[in-house]
Length: 292
Ligand code: GUN
Image (cartoon, rainbow, N blue to C red; front, top):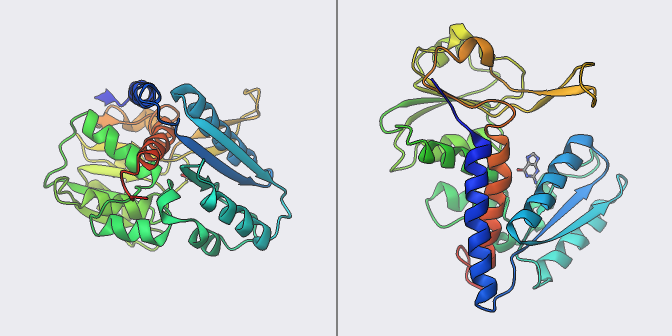
């Protein structure tokens, strides 16, 4: 069994990005510049955005953090987005999700210019991804594909079960795994799937992205399967200084000896998400997906 080291791979990629930035700067070009918009005080979102800003620093990008009050109106948020769309200094930006309940996230995401949508959440990018056209790929699925590639995990003709149909992870993951060149046969499972346990037991690759700690248990895993755990749920833990720990969707301790590869939580998929956002921003700065 191999434990997939997301920290190791993400650090390698950060070094590669840093080298690309140095090259750009030496050629007299500007540093890539990512902006992040954070609305409200959600603790997890603050942490994630903090990681994104810190990663920008590490790879030599400029970053701008726009923080807006919890009570910000849709109108104000949209005008901020239009400002970022029109600001030539910013190569790409993200609006951190979830947004406060009074804001319609679908409506907001439509306002982001597709060429700056480094999260790949705009329907133009999502549609282009589905059609195999150049597109920004959502960061978490992109990070998982990179892990699969760098660990040389066989995907051709394999049966991949994705658990969870979110727009951010499960659904794009199911599309990427079935692409030509990857060639897995994909089953996308969700809360209404009738025989989830059986579906999982048939899987060569399980991608768990439902957000329920320890959901995937030993009895759901075929010996030799590859397990990718996307869960990052905060669970109360009084032994921790913060009062919580981060739990994955997989019962790691009991599953690990059964499988061929497994991602730990933390230190598996998580670090790859941030680095994939950096890669998308680098592409944006070089107009590699959309020409200006
Ligand atoms: N919330 C959880 N994951 C993400 C992500 O990848 N991007 C944004 N913008 N918000 C998120």
